Amino acid sequence: MNLKLIITLSLFGLAMAIATVFVIPSNIEPAFWLPIFLICAYFIAKRAPGKYFLHGFLTSLANCIWITGAHILLFTRYAANHAQEMEMSNKMPILHGHPRQLMLIMGPMIGIISGLVLGLFAFVASKIVKKA
Image (cartoon, rainbow, N blue to C red; front, side):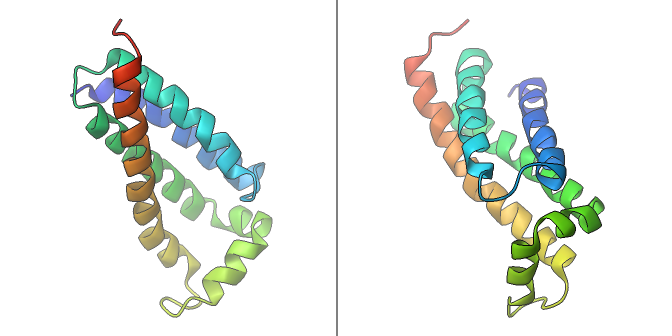
């Protein structure tokens, strides 16, 4: 397991956490994640000692920690720039009126789903990319 690689690649998550609070609206956020996942998959395939899927999965879990943490800590600014998400959170049957707690629950769920995707990307990249 290459924890240094996972932590280093998770810095994309930190950058996206800050960018999604201040600059990037949610409707174009996926356009940023696809290249990030491709870059991460490439570096995992190139530098991980094996267990490519697990490296991708753990990188996404680390990303979700950065993103969830930033969205909760910078909540006022995030809410001001993401009115549609705030409206959706107010319509949720659980934790109605508690968007920070909802983020705390949904963040890891999204992290797991994106981890499955990045893990798959990393596994496929490991079959294509030659080791360093």
